[in-house]
Amino acid sequence: MLKEYLNPPDSFSCDFEKGLLNTIQLTFEKCKVLGCWFHLSQNLWKHVQSYGLVEKYSSDKEFYKAFQRLKALPFVPCDDVVDAFKVIKCNSPVEFNLMLEYFETYYIGKLKKNSKSVREEPMFAIETWNVYERIEKDLPRANNNLEAWHKVFGNDCKKNPTLHKLINQFRLEQNLTEIILDQINSGDTYKRRNNK
Image (cartoon, rainbow, N blue to C red):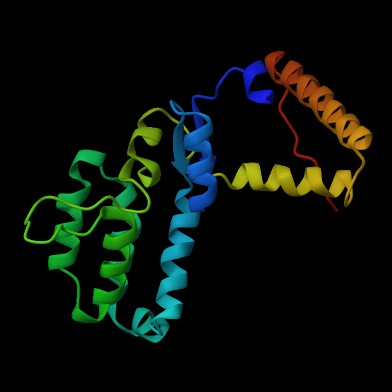
């Protein structure tokens, strides 16, 4: 119902939570969903840990390089991602195959049966996690700043606020934001709030 009164967003920046991504895409059909590069990197590292490959990462230079290349793949133009992934695959040690299989399944799309070029839809489309265009447009590639704001806002709001208190907190936040924007527009430098 609220959607009817709002202008639809051009894009959403979020973590790689499939339920959230599906909801955004169903609610705002034309909205571009942007995954956070930091969280993608964290997901990759968690899989290194879950596959028991931390020692290999620390001691094997080729494994380390393969991991770094995979982490850098979001910086390649979307149209070149699959070819770049193939290059990474060809230049990675055998011990890195679990990571490549995971990434291909969830982020690239596995090759369809009896095909050498047609791929299945991955869980997360390349356009969702690729940051090349964002860098070209000087847009953020991560949403850590939003998470930091949310943490501060949550601390200011306390747990389980009433609707009235929550609305007042949003009003206060809006007023603070407008003051900061006025200061920036008048040439002042913005000082971050100290949470301590």
